[in-house]
Image (cartoon, rainbow, N blue to C red; front, side):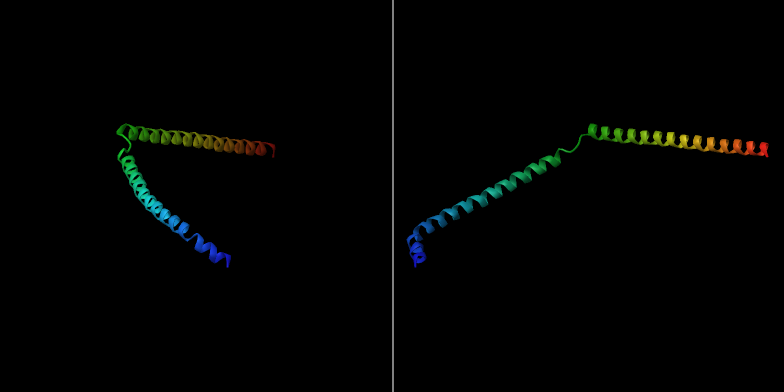
Length: 103
């Protein structure tokens, strides 16, 4: 019973709240459109400002430098592996010669 009375008493208040809410929703929708437009315009301007020729050249030079460094390191590792293999082969030959001279 109290709920019905409360609803009737506050019907006018609820109407004004609904009216205010409707106006607020219209403003929010308009602001969403404006915000979306601003975001789209900023994205387009960002994409249009792509890297300059100088920046592209710097990136390419850095790429070539890193490739050259990697090749140099690989050559160093290959020469170390070859020297280790040669030393192992020489040690094996020396050990075999020693065994042959003892036997």
